[in-house]
Length: 55
Image (tube, rainbow, N blue to C red; front, side, top):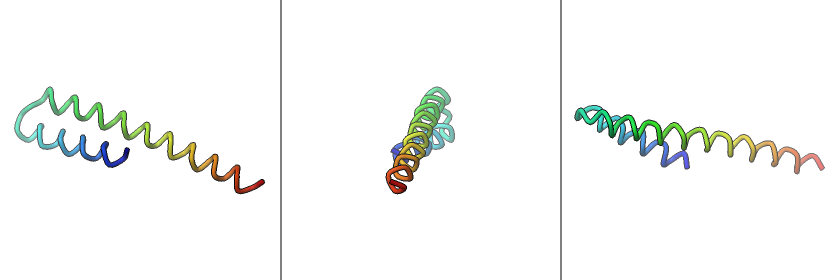
């Protein structure tokens, strides 16, 4: 999922360089959403793993 966030960020950078503002803004929003979903899932995974390791 983090890979897709990076891909959309690169697409946004390329679109911004060529002047496609709407496409760049859309790609940035998708990248932000994917990054935060990845971050939440990663934190939940670490917490669940820590709780399983203690018992």
